[in-house]
Length: 635
Image (cartoon, rainbow, N blue to C red):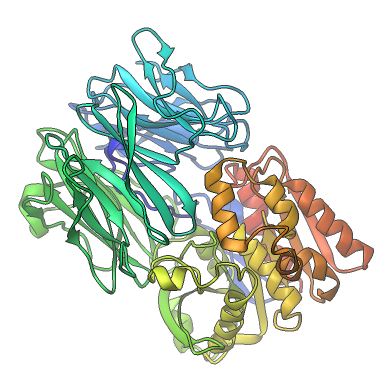
């Protein structure tokens, strides 16, 4: 999705870590394997690159080898040297830069509790000053004034159940009263360049968002677009005219880009739409360029235009690469980009955007400090198969290219993604790379309910958690077992978050299909999960649409909760639980493990201390990645 205020207007959510140099022998499986200590030398940025105008250097969040959490570093472009600027003594979750390109703001929470507070970085980058935030409540930056004197903030500090929009004055250090109605919660906001309007979204359920227009000065608000089972999400305002650009699947199966002249009507004018691709759009108010991202079949293509979809800049980027950043500074012909492939963690590059495909990519970073090359890493391959009901399912296999023609058979980790409407792509996925380097084929099916395959496909698992999508995993496993390099007697399942729920569901519904399993920050009991999720309407409505009501649909809740079927588990299971997780809470997994032990079932349980759902600490990543390999190797 676009993040225009970061000047990196396209960001991809990638599990990214680091890599390796020394190979070790694994006697159990006779594979060349690698330890986590060595898997730290392919650096993985935690943010986009923020090039500093007039200087040949940038800022970014990074966890260097040995760092316990993300810190702020500078990167010298010529020497490619990283220098530590600011260590917050805890993880820094995100970084923003205002349109003046001079002021930086950091988001930090309390060891993974997701209650973010906003801090301003001092001009020497050595310390921070708190801007806004209250303990136990969340604050997120949604926009800036062009002069940086006002910050637009979305926060629930007045009411835990309601997210309102506020304006913070950087001059007098005061927060306004809410711009939005007192008891109405909003889940996203886009601010116009002249600060006359805000476009707001309200999540009604899975695949349904309503769009509102707010006049900031008088706080008058009107509903602009709303339709059952349809998303209307704002991307950006035209810099001069009352035109809003949106992403929507209105009367279509795929998401496209459109515009609305909202002062005149609510009529949608389509810009980009396709029967086979999803489109997302973005625009930089500072540098006056727009982007169009095309997503399909686990791939993503990015196009960049002058102004709002004017002359297209042809990027000098390989066709099989996935772009995670394109940044242009005002008045500069040079742009910065980063792209990855499935077998390469990528670099940051500088290039002359006016020269088109012939532009020279000049590397400004050196992210791979290991001795490994693309030949050592896994490549990705498509696997299409029919599920139990004939539905076409697309999955992605990660394996070393040399394995494909070998007679040697390799064990498999089947990875159900999170979400539930997440998806896997042909990108450098560090979980997968680590496991392939330790001898495992990784298979990631984009089962029914995944995004990126159309609205109809994405909603197929509504009120069917633990149903059809679990069968998709099993049928995918059976299709994979036909490959010559796969050891069908050593297939494991490993998943995190909703993928952890899928893992527990799969081994209770199909207890003989897998050799072993690992569940990471998983949910096991839908009743307790519903009670523990955040109280704001976005969370509540999403879950009610996805799984139904705990009273009205209690029979379904019980049927689909692995907790009530724990006695069926017959294979070794390892569970990792984050201590401070506010999504899949520790008490729920404590009860699940307690129940398993009451049946004398094989389970190993490890709690990750001072950690949240997203696993920010180096120690946690090491325990999960290396611990998973060690656990599966001994089965």
